Image 1 (tube, rainbow, N blue to C red):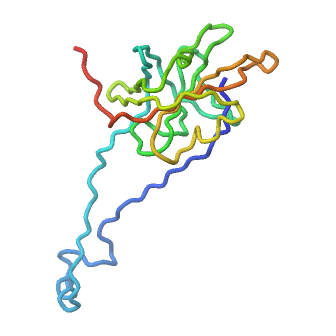
Image 2 (cartoon, helix red, strand yellow; image 1 turned 45 degrees about the horizontal axis):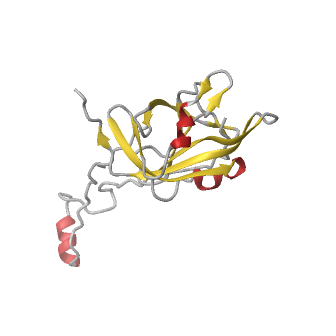
Image 3 (cartoon, rainbow, N blue to C red; image 1 turned 60 degrees about the horizontal axis):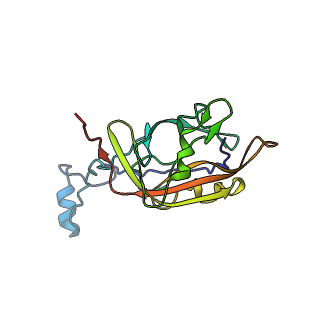
Length: 208
């Protein structure tokens, strides 16, 4: 199980308001006269265009070599990221970024193995190298990320920057590594793979 010290992340949105009761409006009696007498031109209140940015919650991840696993939402409970019990699935941290966001870490974590189910999907992270590409998809859109760092960190250092929702957008993959400590029932370290977007979110290409 991957242990984290969850960081609180918030997002504030700013909306644009239309013409209010306190400002001049086109067609309102006296608006043209007020502008002419003051010499100040009327201000037009515009409506912002809908955002063209596509963002989505990953439903699947594809590692280098084409191997694919389902991605399920995963929450933190008492500072612990509860990843799927099925070791062939991985978990997207629902407190972090989505694919296509401009900022923050899109965090996906999974087990390396299980005493009852054998090797987990993220055991393959042990073979991932810098420069390789990882893709996430929701079935309609996909986003690709190029690996820029693969590092092993102590469990107690995992939260340092890994879950940060500031800074440029990136994909962070987490699993266990190092020596297994039977007395504590877990591995001593975490493997952290960091990747950056290769471009914008794209539609899934049809294979038909």
